[in-house]
Image (spheres, rainbow, N blue to C red):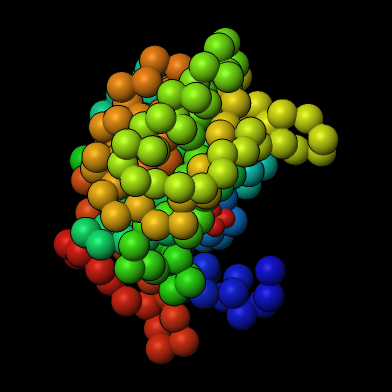
Length: 233
Ligand SMILES: O=C[C@H](O)[C@H](O)[C@H](O)COP(=O)(O)O
């Protein structure tokens, strides 16, 4: 990642930090942008700021522990004030594709348990139509081939084309924090994300998918001209 790109992620994270107030219960996202947020948050915590966070992945949990950000679980703190997370794509109405890092299931559970969700990203994530980033679909390993066939069937019915790939890491199937697999669907364009989300939700082997609809309230998008807020501020 270039230094410029990292700087944009830091700027977006800093804008989101401005919305965090003392005592908040936070959902803490996953990925390179969310990690910049964790680093800034840790500096505030070191200076006496009091927050408690629910991490959306083991990776984020490790970073928080390393930097001294206090953590809780969703079982102990089931209602959160604010989730701050990155995204792979941000489309119309703050519809999102998430899950490039494989954390989509916990991210969605945490976002849904939060009163508010802020997305932080550099400007490259803004798109007119979702789908150029392969859509991550978290699936149960049991019946994988049947589930892939069902996803292909749903895609065909919706006029979506493109290969499905079982995600791999270092030559092995990638396994999520929840012990599931990821199917990456390269549709190119998803003109009706809601129809696809509903159809995927109806497939038993699909645990969750990376379409986040009606979850994000605000996005802070960092570009050359500074940070732009999209949605409610
Ligand atoms: O599973 C990973 C998450 O959904 C990330 O928030 C997403 O992939 C964006 O990550 P990054 O900030 O590294 O582009």
